[in-house]
Amino acid sequence: MKAIRVHQVGGPEVLRLEELPLPEPGPGEVLVRLQAIGVNYIDTYKRRGLYPMPLPFTLGEEGAGVVEKVGEGVVGVRPGDRVAFANVQGAYAEYQVVPAERLVPIPEGLDFKLAAAVLLQGMTVHYLLESTYPVAPGDQVLVHAGAGGVGQLLIPWAKRKGATVYATASTPEKRRLCLEAGADYALPYEGFAQAVKALSGGGVDVVYDGVGKDTFEGSLDALRPRGMLVLFGQSSGPVPPLDPQVLNRKGSLFLTRPTLHHHTASRKELLWRAGEVFRAVREGWLRVLIGAEFPLEGAREAHEALEGRKTVGKVLLIP
Image (cartoon, rainbow, N blue to C red):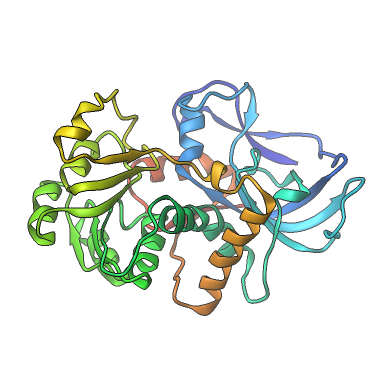
């Protein structure tokens, strides 16, 4: 089978298309023939060495496809089933072995591309809005990178929960996408903290920040006293060390750095979050914007486009 491998960390040029033996599923595992693969910022972090991995490794951790073979002891999953997964390393490939307990069934009415496009980022949005800071009617919310894959799901979900949503994006076209997704205000990054404070009457209740270094200080400044900054990514780079006294001076603020893995640790929680996301897509109020598709061998170009902020919505690889 073909797979995208990383032998040394670095830029997109380190991604190599290789031929590997077809893997065999062990006890409790399933072999999936992939039909669509999600490209996520966490893939770029691992490629660059920000999240260290044993070398060499196959990149990617989200996909959708058809069960090809099941290992010993697997129940409830059969060859031919349509399944998806997230947070399982090795998805940039034609086939992947996945623990059966990490698979979720794809419901009728959703194709492979939609399933691969929404699962990881959709479950991220679910835990951000339902668990990390449970948004309530009347809350004021700031979403960074509103035209990106997570942002395009965060905005309508927060609006459905009754929030006023402020979104940032880098270009007029991307800000238009934020408004089309339901944002009440779409702002450039320049001076966003001052603009949000003025529009909100003193600051928002929560900032969902997946950008990191470039927006971090402004995100703190955009909060009301006792507001919460949810830092869930670092597309612009890691945030420097912080003196906790800063949170005191800026209004007894809360800061958290969650991750999806800890919010889908049990199968019960995984199925709950995935089921809520898939249901939202089937009901039609959660629109999935697939902004770009690349062949598997185009992984380098996909990463260049993603990191160059040349994409909107979700980026997919198609084996």
